[in-house]
Length: 485
Ligand code: ADP
Image (tube, rainbow, N blue to C red):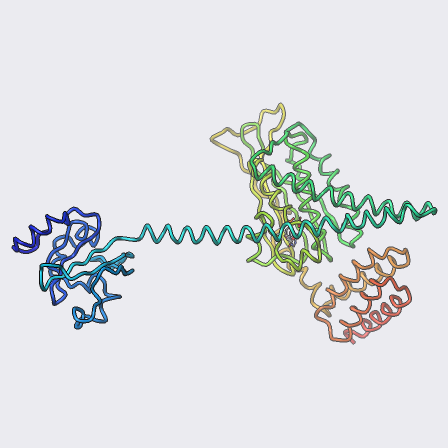
């Protein structure tokens, strides 16, 4: 610690074991010049022996620099501990807790004791962050509970109401109609409860896959059968391609692969009102009796904002509360998909553009029974991605559909108008409402009178008022006939 030949100072410093103290200790005189420093100070400030001779405000310029000349007169010396930034020789700095005292018995000398508080600050910040995270998690969970409760209440109310009505009805046809509604309510609840159970098992790490041999193309046929009606009923096209290299038989958890595809296709259907939905299956790599299968689900729906895309696969995340109100759902589906895909050695991702569409893709590794496959552990064989795999830019042509007045837009409006009137004639009001919503979206950029005609049509459909629907339909059709004149 010795910087000068001042014996008495040295003695005192030794007396207080300052030299080897963990904190930094500086001794300075009435002009602010450092006359001694202990080992910790020389090391941590990285000055070594050059520390003596510097001014104390060279070390704490932010806090002491402003009072340089008056420092000794103005600084409130005493036991108070202050937070300051200590600057090293290379002008990098770190946070310190500092105490400055007049040195008792050494008139004209002062002591500065400083303790590096980087770690403490870090721990404090981490504790604060943990608290914020915990608050946010709690908020997300309560929103989730509110959402699920709402989701369950809808089918339960439906089941209750319909069952009560059933008990009083004689008419067989009406009974069957109500029973179908009851069945639908039960299915909805069943799906929600299954999702919650899957999620909690996955979250607890207790989920076990059950791989068995199965035929890939039969599985895809089953998935097609699950969704084809709903997709075409909405007036959308549905394409499925399984590339020829995909093996006939694989060993995997068929139920769970179907679950992932069902979830992605249901979302694609839910969030698409015009255009098409495509499912593609491709073999992308092969190694040691295993193959990598790549699945793509492409839609021309509302798309997802970039900022929301990262949130998609997190638990309980629904991109926007207003969307979940409109479309329903618990927000667990994609998180479950992600966890299942990861259990199958793969990964899931999304590419999307609002107003253009979304591409959800995932790959998984599966075994192929009883086949000598090319490729070894060290040398996997990778396949070129086939041409037909779409990219986001391929979907952009879809945007014309939404630009009011474009040929694609007018064609789509006409198509939806005739589908709507057909559904009304067939007394299918639910379907008619779907087309009326699509019409409203297709006329979003239209002039005021067209927009309000579309809105009136939607309201008439919601009220199931046949005459008003026909009138609103004619009005909208008439307005369209003048576009482009
Ligand atoms: P849920 O079970 O509520 O549908 P998901 O985890 O499957 O939950 O989806 C979460 C959210 O992601 C949806 O509420 C929706 O906002 C968004 N999303 C998922 N798929 C699509 C898609 N194909 N197009 C647009 N938005 C989507």
